Length: 162
Image 1 (cartoon, rainbow, N blue to C red):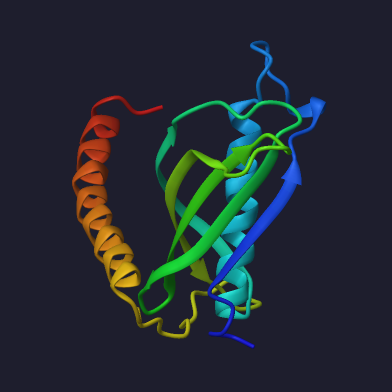
Image 2 (image 1 turned 180 degrees about the horizontal axis):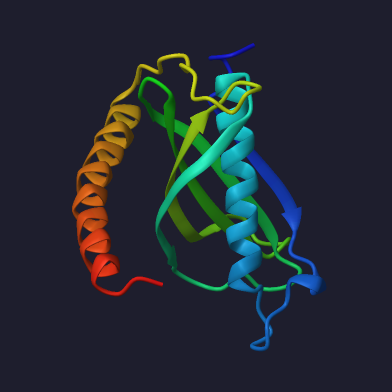
């Protein structure tokens, strides 16, 4: 039911097929996990198909090693009329260790679409705790910065098309 599934966590072992030349998990594999968890969270909240319109601030803070238990946590932190801001955090730990350490974090924006691929309204999300209000404020701050980045990007690409 739309508007009820606000967060989710994927848990799995980092597999040898995800290894890069340095012996750790390839950054592209981590980005795929982020996209999958973000999409599942957004689609669960919207109750419909969603498209990714923005992924920002991906910071690889430390590597994920093959064989570690990986947790990819995604949660709705802010909604607009048709859009959802989803914070995604990747953490990893050795299977015998107590606590996981954050390895990657980013903020994603998804837009809900109908069967004709037109944007449609999403259920409104209202933060209920101080932590949730902080996450919403964080998303609004990133949104303001994203507008400046997009203006710089447009200006640059206009000078250097193709």
